[in-house]
Image (cartoon, rainbow, N blue to C red; front, side, top):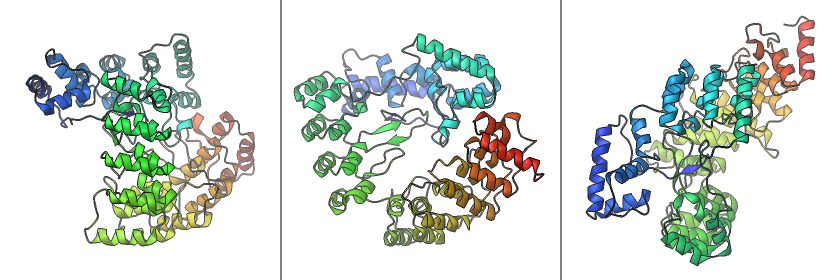
Length: 538
């Protein structure tokens, strides 16, 4: 996901347009009166604002940007209820008129995920609900039919979902609109791309053109959203980094995760890059200019983790001198058993520092999350002693799912030990927010499982009572269906031997094991299914 400039104001749960108008008027009066706080806020969102000509519509623009919107009309539309969740409801209901009015008011809604933990977009719901005219409208307004949903992106693009459901009318519309888009690209149809390393500013950093950078900064062209500080580090130009920091660019490159209506902050990529590359001097420059040593780069490791893992004590000590600390997840991922034990003891005594555990999490939960992936059965054992969740608690699912990430050099025995320890505490049929059970995820093997790994994990789950007749919400298929779709013949054979139904007469015609084997081009799996039926073993 891209990063955009973070809001500097927060809307109330039920925002009031009249109050926002009053705040815009107050900002206008304060800026014209020379109030320094007002000037700082105005110039953060409107770089070349002039108090002598600053008008109410300018103040409203600043207010909109301060709340994370491109314009006052878009902020007003949000307050009036034009939001991504309501757009999805209109799509599902087949209400094209409402979809039209909402997208007209806020075109960006087409490109927004439903939530940070739900990457469905309006087009996904239009396809899944089989709303061809809404699919056409969304495609004509820039919707991306090739954008998948985590964790199985390739299998969950709108285009792929339409193909696999045999929605030929929807497939034809997507293909037609994509062809039209290629022939007649519309600059306004798609989100504006983030500046690349080929931009003039990036080039100036690479060659050390300080005069050009100073001139562009004076013109109000250089901004915090362009990744320039990170580029100076990538280019190994400490002189340019010093210049950018002296010009006032954000050493944290703070931002919000793009593609979301909700505000999800992210910061610290420059310092994390220094930790990865071992550039202690540049890290020191960032820290001296106020960089937060406890980075929070979205869906990425921390600077402290990278420093500890790659460069030992020197860079780690520098970060610690400025208040850096390892999170509970990082402690577990690094396999620091003694430190994990101290974190748990401190937590039991109420002495856990802020930031050691993630938002809405706990030390024990974060240790489990990191240790099952590391793997560290020792830390898993310690964390389980501090965990009292019931067997049916849905939180177990995410922990176990994170245990399916194996690499070519992973210690398979320790991974299975850690996984087994957690599985012994919970119901193997816990379902994810997507309706899947763990055997589904083993079949998809997004964690890099080999054929023998899939057999080992599936056997373990089935031995613990995992059901084989559960259908997920997206592909509406059983674990056997998933195994057929992804071509996991060893898993197909195992599931059939353990009682899976090869026919699945209750499935949608496109979601049976045989249908998956056929449409995905796995004749050897189709033969296994047919042979199992012929032998009368179903």
